[in-house]
Length: 321
Image: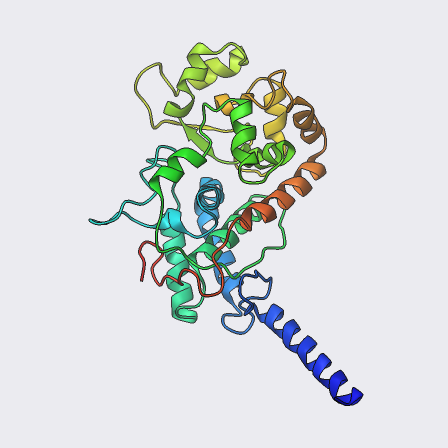
């Protein structure tokens, strides 16, 4: 082959590879520009819907962030958490960590309807969850990150995996470290991701035992929370997860140092154990927390995605096609 022909083919192959990466058509690879040709306005559609939802109810930002986490920790970021139960199928919504707890499905439905109108059959529910989580954090004053897209949606879900993989509000520090380690995260990344509890609220049933039976809790704080969480009844009464639940900041970590962690699993991060130093770092360095949280979110968003010809692009996020 002549040198000039070889050079031409090499350049052509390089150009083709670059175009494939640019437009997200390579199998198994996520890309920042995956929808550049097929749905160029998808980000603005999602951002607008999330901003509206969070403006109407600040708690929704925490709920959308949590939906993404509860999706990715169960067999990867594949939108399995969104599937409704049917007569022949039991999804993940009734798993212990999810039942009467995860929310925000109507916001995802709204986004999906708008995207299907603009770009039918193109944008996956898994990518919607990823983008909505990022936009929720930004809407509440937190950091953004360079999100990648190209995930596809699962055609199944796992109730058992949801019950076993998702850490609960009574988890010990060792259980939290183990749970996140099983997904490839370091202990420091676990602490950073736990900082998501700087926004949102929790139900009385998830922290009642801590209020009435644990000693490593600030007394005035416990007394104030008990007013909305009696020793019996009021299971669904809400209390904020930190002292600034509508702002994504580092207040959560300062609260832990002052023994104002709402959940048992929260206070475990600062209880004389190996995570204490990291909590102190984030408490005094908000930029460090923001950076580490954003980096950990990118890593979490890339957990075992379905790509290429795997899975499908659901036209309704609640059911398979």
